[in-house]
Length: 488
Image 1 (cartoon, rainbow, N blue to C red):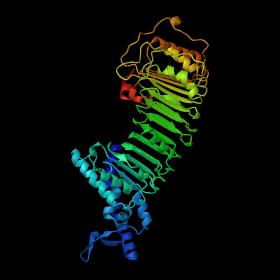
Image 2 (image 1 turned 90 degrees about the vertical axis):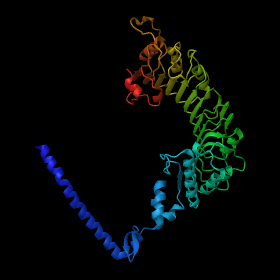
Image 3 (image 1 turned 135 degrees about the vertical axis):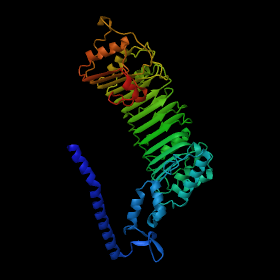
Image 4 (image 1 turned 30 degrees about the vertical axis):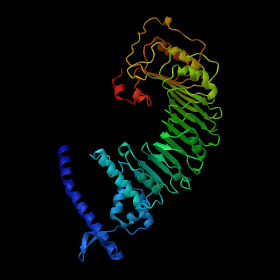
């Protein structure tokens, strides 16, 4: 009976909707007619009706031009360009559009079945047309992606585009450029760079000189695969005294990175895969977060950046890196609160040391392998990690991730009297322990037993046998990847 009643109710709905739609349409027509009688200007030359042999169209409400401009600026670039083709109000504002996001996606070329030459030609002509019709006034945000498909682009075109778009008042610049291109630092001189807050350059050369204007508003600088030398980078950051975040990725010409004390607002430094880098010296007094990833340990001087509280270090070609950290870093970063370490080869057991991480609260250690099918060295003594826990008296979170690969360990059964213990090493602040990639290695069982017996404030411990290298950023079991779903 209930199903029959439901069918009858659904059968009546289309008629009700049609009656309601007709009534609403009549009401709208009445309102439009009334407005037309009052203003007499809503219907102008267009394409929706005819009057005296002329096509007419509805021009929209009579709003101030600054309101139309604001609406136009909120549209995505493709929609804004289309609107400018059918509206005089939008056409006028198009010449002052503040957001120029010029990529294959925003211009509708991403899914085109072009050959590379055809796509590059269409991309070039579209960008050229957009910037040719822009006044260059009012640009706040510029993103230009010249991908590898456009490496034969005429440099004269590119220079012309940047000269049009980079004008006084610009706040964000993101440029993915041909590798042969040298970004002209003159574009940031003469007042053009004063309002700039964010600068990202990818795959080009950048040669700042003393003639570069002050970038007094620049807070974020990101250089990726940029050819820039030590003295040129020093010149650039010395002109950017408001800088808060500095990121360097694959900048192979940098050998010695020196951060001057003038960068009082710099709080975050990220240096990754700068293969020829040998030394990092920071005198920035308020640097609090430092991330470093490379093949070798560099000479690190952070003594004048004593506020560093978060440190993430990955030296993927360095053996026994953990041993190096525990013996050297307590003096280099004395106020450290969060430490993340990545090691691929620990052959030496972690030693006991006298120096302490007096403020360290969170410790994350990744034991990884360059070959995902191979395991971390079988002979490593996991119980020796007690030394780094012992050197961290206020540590409350300890996370250990081990990439086990296909390595099999002997099973541990029966009498526990043969397991080693480390009496006298209490970890009174430790509350949270996670071991991801847990295995039956005897030393790992010994470490686990030690923590259960000596972490007197322990609230929970997680032992997970699956360590998914693609899931290391979110290692909780509830965030399941395909590998985790099959793990026991």
